[in-house]
Amino acid sequence: MRNHRNKIHNPVISIIRGSHQQKSLPVLILAGSLIVGTLLFSACNMPRKGATKTVSGAGLIYTAAAQTLAAEIAISTISPGQLATLPPTYAFPTAIPTNTPRQPTETEYYYEEEAPPPPPPTAVPCDYATYVKDVTYPDNTELAAGTVFTKTWRLQNSGACTWTKDYAIVFIDGDDMDTPSSVALPHSVRPGQTVDVSVGLKAPDTIGTYRAEYKLRSDTNQVFGLAGNKPFWVQIKVSAATGLRLDFISKANSADWISGLGSPPGTDLDFNGAEDNIEGVAKIKDGVKLEDGATSAKVLLTYPKHENNGFILGLFDEYTVQKGDHFKARLAFMLSGDTCSGGDVKFQLAYKDNQGYHLIKEWNKVCDGAQMPVDVNLSNLKGKSIRFALVVLANGDPANDWAIWNSARIEHP
Image 1 (tube, rainbow, N blue to C red):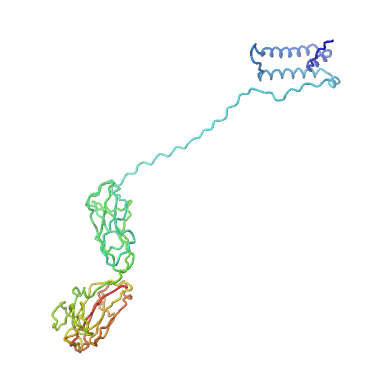
Image 2 (cartoon, rainbow, N blue to C red):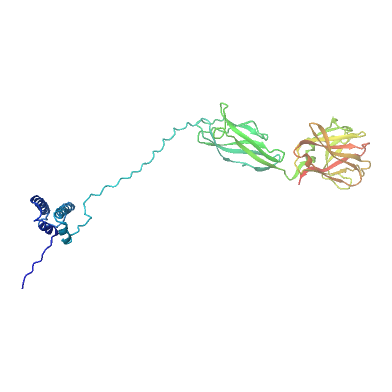
């Protein structure tokens, strides 16, 4: 049996053999030198015994370069006819692995803006107040006209100086509501402490909204307010009180009484004087018989001056009229013995202001055995502060003119 050797076809060697006869010695020497160099370089990189066979990237590059150059030299030595008969050549891979070290990526840095420096500390003023709360009567509390009340605030000393008892709250602006011009602090107040400050007030007599503003005054007469210079205040709403607003019977002893002829002016008359006084009489009577036979409670007796067309007049304390106020009374005569025969007067409701007396309403009354109820709407006088006058005028001869005001009053429904 014949042994067949396997032939190893090396395209580079074949190219060199085919060209040996046609190329000059220098070319052959150059080609041989390249091949020897390649082999020697490969031998230097052969693994030692026991070592794992590895091929470096640089070795692959040099080997491939040598093989490529040898092939190009061999090809350049053959004729075009020979080139057509050459067997196919081995194609080297175009991508050659390398050990190119990984380039470091650019490091990203983040910078925080520096915070601006804090502002320099502000000096605390000597006198500085802070509002804490309303202790009494918060804003828009409703009060009846004429109500006396005490408003209290709680304030904090937020300044650098102690408030002594020489400090005070002072009225600055608005409706004074009978407020004093200043009220001293109740005690010393160190920085950071609070104090309750109060002022006595009276609600106005007219319906509406009222506000009074205040600040503090130091012991050196420097006026200061909240947060520097803002005022603190009291604000109320005045509403009309319902029911009885003015009782003429109970207030009669404090009225100014005069008597005379025809119309005022007249002469002063003592209240609760003798009933036979010819100048007239004004007094409270209780449990007397009236012309209709009823026994009275407390009533106001007003007998005019004992002359024809004599009069008696009582002028009451100032009153501010509210819308809806009504004057009410029952007009009558007191019996003298068992009769009031001859009684004949004019009952008048009037008022006095800076311009003098003004008639509101007049009623003619004779002793006829019946009381006369009266009711006058005073709304046309709303907001006016006036003094009411109860007047009795004799119609001619004043004999038996024991005129009675029964339950005379002002009411607000």
